[in-house]
Each structure stands twice: as C-alpha cells, then as structure tokens.
Image 1 (tube, chains in turn yellow, red):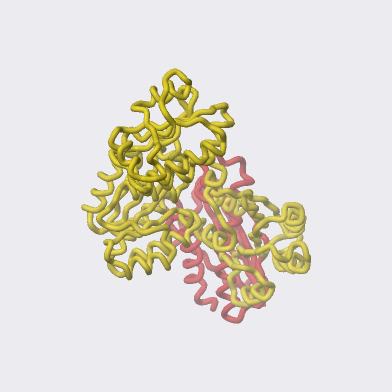
Image 2 (tube, rainbow over the protein chains, first blue to last red):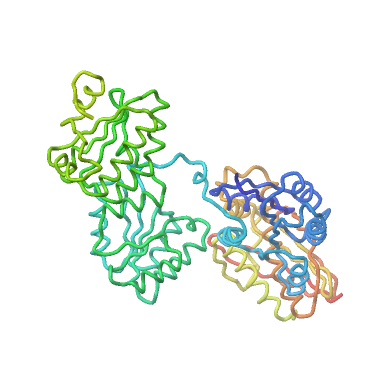
Amino acid sequence: MPIKILTVDDSKTIRLIVGKAFRSFDCEVFEASNGVEGLAVAAKERPNIIILDLTMPVMDGFETLTKLKSDPDLKSIPVVMLTAESGRENVLRIAKQGVRDYLVKPFKEELIIERVGRIVDLKPKGVTNAKAKRFDDPLTVLVVDDKPAISDQIIHGLADTPWSVQGRSTAGEGLDYCNKSVPDVVIVSLNLPDNAAFTFFQMLRAQPKTKSVPVFAMCVKTASDEQARAQQSGFTGIITKPIDFDEVKSRIARSLNLDTSYKYFEHRDGVLWIKLPANFGTAVANEVTGQLRPKIAEAVDAGLGKVVFDLALLKTADVTLIKLGLEVLQFCHEMSLRSRMVGSGTVAQECRKFEETKDWAFAPTFEEAVAALNGKEAVPA
Amino acid sequence: MIDQLDELVTQAVARAFDTMLNVKVAAETSDATLWNGEPHVAGSVGFIGKLTGVVYIYSSATFAREITGQLLGLKIEEIEGEEMVNDAIGELTNMVVGQIKSQLSDRGMPCVLTIPSIVRGSQFVVESMSSTTRRFNTFKCGNHRLGVETLIKPS
C-alpha cells in the first residue's frame, strides 16, 4: 500500500514542490488548497500524514489543526506544519496542538523527505511491488574502505557477477555517492578512522532513500569487539577478512532476497533438474534448502513428476551434502515424485560410508538419469 | 528595529533564493537600473500588527519564469501560462516576508501575514504616507536583477 500524503497549502507551487519531493517514493500525494478542502480530503482518503500550511484563505492552518485534533477519526493522523512563519509565539501555539513537526519555508526538498520519513515508512518507488531481482541482474555494490587494495580485491572477487563495485575511500565520499545514486548494497570498513563507519551507517539509516539498503560491516576475523558493536548497531551483517567471496555473494543475495533458484533448479526434458555447483558449501546448501519446497511444488504444478538430483560437479561428499540429499529425497517422497541422482564414482564411494546413504545409486550423467526415469535404462534407486 | 530592515531583507532574500533555487544573490547599492522598460512581475505580501507594512519583490517577467521553472523543476517551455508564475513568485515573496515577520515577532512586534498578490507592469511607483518608512534594496542574481521594496510604519 502506498503511503498517502496530504498537502494542504493555498500555494499551488508548494503543493507541486511537495509532490515532486515524494515522486521517487511509493507515495500517493493528495492536494487541498485550504483547510476546508483539507478536512474533506482527510476524511475521504485517511492519509498517513498531513503537511499543513498556516496562512491560507477560507480556513487557516490553526483552525484546520484544531478541527483535525477534535475529530475522533482524524486526530491520530500525524501533522507536519510547513509554513513561512517561524516566530516563537506561533511555534509554541502550534506545538500545544500536537503537531509532529514544524518546517519553515524556505525549505529544501531533502529536508521535508527526511522529516516525513521519520514519521512514516517511505520506500523508494518500485521496491515494494517490484519483481524479485535475480542474482544475475546488474547491482551496484558500494565499498567504503580507506585501503584501495581492499576495494580492488572486492572488484576482483565479484568479477564473475554482473555487479558494479564502486570504491570510495572515506565515509564522506560514500555519502556523496549515496546522495547522487542509491546503491543496492553497501560494504563499509570498520577500520575507517574516528568510528566513521558507525556514523556513516547511522546517516544511511536516517535517510529515507537509503534506510532499507543492506549495509555490511567489514573487519578482520579477530576483531570480535568491533563485530559485536556492529551487530548491536544493526548492520545487516559482518564480512570478515580474509574475504570468502562465495559467502559474500550468498549473503548479498539473501539480504536483497535475490532469486538464485535458476542456478540450482531447471525444468528440462520433462524433469526437475536440481544441480549443485562445484563450490558447494553451507551457503549454497542454505540457498537450495530455502528454495526446495516451493520449487518442487512449482514443478508438480507444471506437470513434472520426476526429479534428477545432480552432484556431478562435486568432488566429495560431506555431512552438509548428505543432509541436503536426504531432504531432497524426503520432499520427492512426500510429493510422490520419482527421483534419480547423478554423481561421480568418488562421491558414490563416500556415500557408501554412511548408514543413511549407503544405498544411494548414481547415474553418470543427467541424460542417463532421465533415461532411467523414463524406463529406458535400469539404474537402481 | 526599522534601522535593521536592510539587513533583515538582505538575509531573508539570500536565504530564500539559496534554499529554494540554489541561487546566490548579491546586494547592490543602487536601484537606478532596475526599470529598463521590460515587463516586470511584482509579488507582494503585507503584515499587520504592531508594525504594519508591505513588501514588494520585483523581477523581470523573464526572470520570473526562470524562477518558476527552477522552483518546480520544469523547463521554461513547460510552464503553463502566467498563473503558475504568479503563484511561484507569490510564494517566494511569502517566504521572504515570512522570515522578516518572524524576526519582528521575536523582537516584540507580533504581526500576521496577508495572502500574497501579484501585479504586472513595466514600471512601478508606490506612493506612501509621510509616516511610512520606505526601503528599496536591489540584488544581482546572475544575469538578472531583483528589487525589494519595503514600506513599514508603527500601527
């Protein structure tokens, strides 16, 4: 649901400026040119917030505010005054009526966005209803670190993604970047001087444009005090050095709720093909597990009755893999799906060492597994 | 208070133009060249209370359109008719006079503002009563000039 903002001002210019200020947010801006119209629109639309002028014809801001606050249905709507009159007497008089904030003209658009954003949850347009982004969609990752070598390392580490990494060496430069263009993710070094990473984080969270952007703190593994402080401050997560880039990609994907399923799930030749990558580990296992049930349900909906669980790229089998394999087979059983596994001889041998997996059988290729599922070749299940 | 009027006006104009239009204005010493035969727009807002007065802000019609475009984030050709310009200049005048009024109120001279109004013409002469103090300040804004006329008297 978009946030409803009502601007009550006799100046069309101000109403247009307010509308322009919130254009990039998921908002609906309603206008009224005096208090009488304002009360009528408020009663009809029930806005989430009202931005109210003071000096207006027909009914001024004082009277409008009094009527709003005496109406049981409207009194809880937060009101922000936006007026050219900043005299102490006026401010005190209005404060007594219970306004949430008081802005004085002239004003910057950024100021009104910031103040309104403190009261209602402003979300950039497109965020709420946007189709989920995929892992292979372009993203911008802002890295703020005073050591250029770290930014270079991250650029290199994420080079196999279509993501653009923007390196900045100070918190100030990082904020300048965010003011011009909102990044999808921020990684900031906790080693910036004067606790700048924490100030930077707080400033990002205070701005409606950036308050939902995932911000990761970065430090060495052993800096446990800094990590604890970052966690308490509300950072999205901690990235430790030396950096594990598979882990970083996975955490960025999770923080942005990126669709990674295409990497592991595919409908081909009438079967659901679940394929694990060569870099399989806990991060990948978590991603696959999280998508397993909906993807199997989706396959059943699409009329597929068979599953191939493909471990061909894996060189070894560990407990994480075995747990995932058991989960896949359990889901297939629950949904009455026929399944076959694909894997190398080494993986098959390792599986034989475990009680739960000693009977697992593997086809050497996807095609042979499909053939077996179609009854053309016998591969023991 | 009245002797500080020039300073109050200068601060108010500078702040309104800087904040709303991102334009720096520079106070000038003379109003001799403001009227050049070009059509002008005058926004006026009055204040009534212990001190009573009115402030006019004069700008050329061309500059007024530029101000409107800048305020609303529009290209000049996107500005529809004079109504939009009138409203923008009226609001800018309101912002300038609002600051002056607030300063007066905080110094024990409370007053209320009137609704902005607009006059258009090529040369304006405001004749005031003998007890009225009149100030005319001019400002340079890039290639344009701006005149601010203040008429004020104790009630």
